[in-house]
Length: 301
Image (cartoon, rainbow, N blue to C red):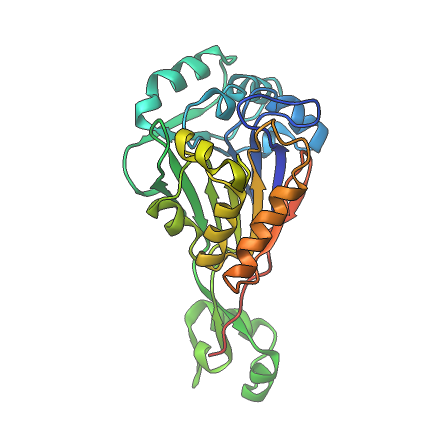
């Protein structure tokens, strides 16, 4: 299972219909909980997501709407008897805040803290890239290694079937038959998270080649001045970011409470995508949405 479960979509303050930030990326056996704002534990119940699904917590920065739900989620994991390690990734400058938050949680969890202070890998397949916000902030990118897709007609022509397919995949060769003879390249899937930031090189790097891009869309284009003042993105900027990077699906979130209807924000992002001649699908997220990671791309070999 690879999908994004949207737990909350409001920035700074919740509304009657939108909770604070919160996103769970379900990725095979992993569960990456991104920016659990206040109320995330309750939102997980509404979404039907067990606390045991969380294996990593990824904080983009330590503003309250991105982390105040952490103690409750961790305490719930203790209550539910979670035994696996839970890794927490966060900007190093937020050490005191994170220590205070996890200190409020019920003891009994195998919690492992991983501060980072520069771009680079923080776990297998998981990288961080600096963003431009009012405090130290990073985006996250989860990348699957590239692989290959076997073509049934080529396998049949080469006389490879049954368990021999597995042997070929494992060893790279079976007699005179090479993997490259019966398959095509399969780029690994890539999911990127760009939360609180103004337009910057880091955001562009994260969006590049993303199958699914979760991006903040705090302001409408008409409020671009406010976006620059507070170092956030407008909907049109988020759309342009996704289009320039060739992202396949853009999920907009982190909406200001000044916009009770986010349909116009989606329209602004879609207009930016069209202007760039891109084909990105734009989703304006609502609490409780589940957005699947698009199927793997296949390139001809």
